[in-house]
Image 1: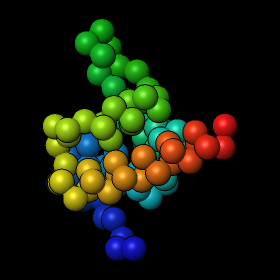
Image 2: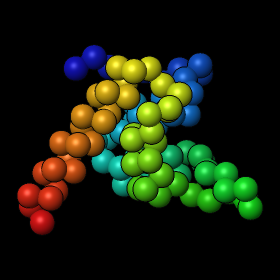
Image 3: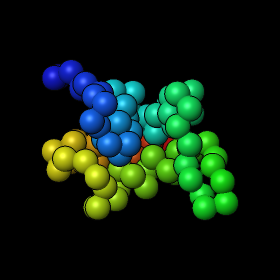
Length: 88
């Protein structure tokens, strides 16, 4: 697999998708973002990321990231989602 490099020109959505592809877990991705100090602006203030925030970005058709990156992240998410449905 080609290494995913985070650059200073990466958008927040790109950072999230790349980290999700690396960690392969929405929970671990939200934990990483929170440890790095990233927060969600709610309009009333800021809060920590939760798994649903990561899922929303992965499934957002208008996400500010390359089509290929979105495609890979969505495919991995579907694979993980379908696997968890079979297990539980």
